[in-house]
Image 1 (cartoon, helix red, strand yellow):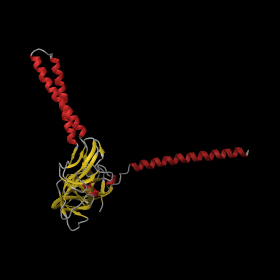
Image 2 (cartoon, rainbow, N blue to C red; image 1 turned 45 degrees about the vertical axis):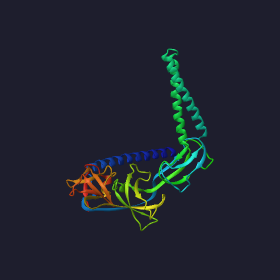
Image 3 (cartoon, one colour; image 1 turned 90 degrees about the horizontal axis):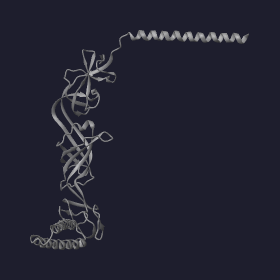
Image 4 (cartoon, rainbow, N blue to C red; image 1 turned 90 degrees about the vertical axis):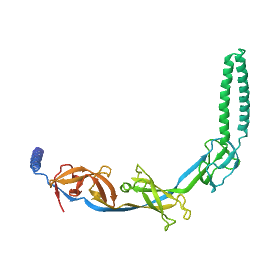
Length: 353
């Protein structure tokens, strides 16, 4: 009897819980429906206006000097090195003899080829005379003519190989390295020496995506080597990288002369100091007002007091925490500077101070 009573009590309790749950869900749905009828609150934002300013900006970047001209001397022949004529550290002029490779066997083969060529020319002359007298078939002279062409090609190739046994400097500069000695056996493609010209140097620097937009090819730059802090030199931007590295920095090459009174070497550290567009008027906006990248910049402009409009703009240089606006905005425009995260075109906003 007690078990049956417990069963009915448990069943009654379970049904009560189910009814309560259904009632709660109904009230929640009714409340949500009522809330959906309430107008959404305006998104709070802060705005600013583009400012007309005198633009003057500087940039300092560290870098390393690299040679403008550097080249490996490569062997184009095979053989034993008979003699070397230039040592490490020596100045060489383009065309100077660096090393001589044994060419004895090549000269012997050249003499044999030339002797055979002379014989073929005589055979050609003799057969020509016989053909004119109809004493020899024409195919004989054709064979001789083909032999002459082959021998001439071989003679030309041997002369080139003999010329290649005289290894010469391909450029003017200092022989920084020499990889062969007298008696060395080398082959085609072997590195013989390295020549470096330090009359001019490249200063290689890295700049951020913000700063690279300010730099122009041909721009004049003040360069200060760490070893000569009181002796600046004038450099010129010769190349600007088109692709960022993994750290989102861009390579910039600056060509600088190498003064004789303050000689610099490859691998030395230096600073490049840029001055951008001094005393120029331009319209600026805080960098944080820009949504997206500077290459595809857009801003949110408040119109009709409470609506925002997405507007594409074109930006110029970056000046510390500000960006120059080239087109897309007027000085009277109200641009959202805080609160862009939740905005979309046509959103309702409330401007706060």
